[in-house]
Length: 136
Ligand SMILES: [Zn+2]
Image (cartoon, rainbow, N blue to C red; front, side):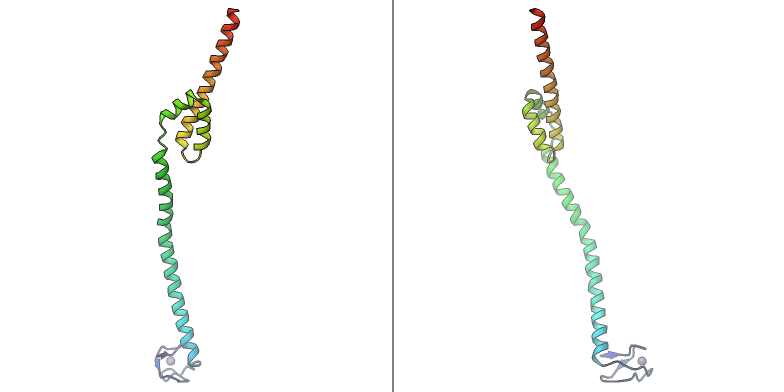
């Protein structure tokens, strides 16, 4: 079916002029193909854009929530890592470097334990040296 581009009246196939308003009708194939392509192009583009906009935010939310949940499952921040870092400062330092990104809470405790352990051991060493010097 063809329609007049001026008034929208339904036209007979092959009509050169609109019988309702007298407007000149372009060649039979061009108005049909042009109108159908523009109308069909506009609708899918709008649909795809709107569907992408609707689908993208939930996807990003999922990507954000899943890794953080996994991190929190293992990143308990247990005081045990601080105790291990305190007793074995070298291991605490290694744990701090390994866990710095995936498990910041555990890394912080292990690193703090290692730091405190190092300081305490240095103080004990100084005290021992001082005692040995004093006794001599
Ligand atoms: Zn017309």
